[in-house]
Image 1 (cartoon, rainbow, N blue to C red):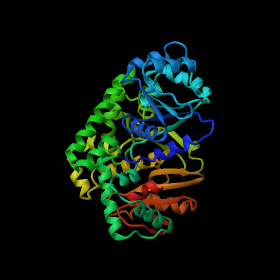
Image 2: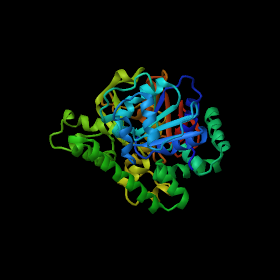
Image 3: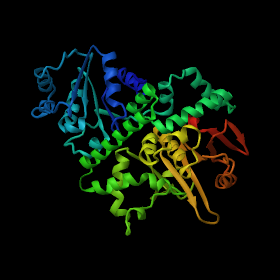
Length: 432
């Protein structure tokens, strides 16, 4: 079974006094259910799971009175239990299919005898109406597909090796050449596999790219089905935007152009559909900033943006048929560098950074791939897909203009600094 970082968060939550219910949100198939099941069975004497999609009859438990005793009685009548005070975890899975269960959480938490975790797809949680949210009685966390460090765990890379990467980055010293080469290969594997647990499992079991692609296409098709199910009247536009992500990224400047969708594009026509994909965490927004200064949020131009796929492996499977072998062999310059740029966007999003980019026309033309705010520091980032990674006139000019900006170039090379710019191999992006 894959090791996940959320396991640490779950254990910390269990030790919290007067704990609230825990709502774990995330896109479909990122591993929420599996991680919660593992945690519940290992840390409680009694683990009770109600999956409202697999067992729709469980919705009847919440169809009348929502006081705790009535709910526990109803669960017992359906054969659920045992209910051991202070040592029972009750798991409401696919909670978006039973809004009344979400309402009941407030009363269940107030009762205090048992612990509660809710989980569900962001598609349903964000778009299904709930009559009364359990404000003040619920802690929410987002779960993502595997990040690169979790992928390394799946590849049986020891923590000693990962710690050596962290130490080299801290000291800004080159990584051992043999380790650098194998890490570059692992990152290329991550680009074509991505982080969806079912896909990663297939990869480490078979190392068969054809099997991996089939698993990825199953997930992509399930996303299309969810769009039809949850997007309502906007489903055609949402589907159109979803399918256009690869071709939009394939352009030189990567900016999203509505004109590629319609002869008469209007932001107000497509805005809700675009936001739907962002809220469902199927796609990642990267907004333009008019100025690189703290705080970035005050400089955002929300009508200018890039759209990335949330999982890099799904992007490759969706858009670039037959390039998996090329990527694995080190050719990542194809498609105007869109692959490596989306890979980094995926990594940064899993670190919970908000993504921005910068461009200006006057007095000189400039564009920076990523602008990220870390506390009160501003980091500007260039993603260079080829051997010309020292060619970055926009980044160089900005560093000359503002000495407080921290510049990073992610590239094929080992760790080194030159002219105030830090050059890092792609695989260290998970340590930003």
